[in-house]
Length: 78
Image (tube, rainbow, N blue to C red; front, side):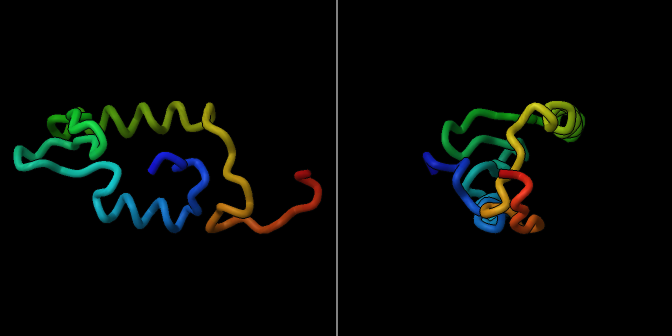
């Protein structure tokens, strides 16, 4: 998982859905699979985490077309 930024979106979704990146532990907390750290301990904290991720979304690199599920090659992007 060290090269997560190079995964195709479909592969990343697969990892998410199979709890390879985050998971819900036995105490119903959202945790990091890598560290075991609790990211959200209840539904309100999860909503706050989701809101924060939505807020910082514009600061994250755009998805290159070759990794995207929805984009196709556009020679004008080069």
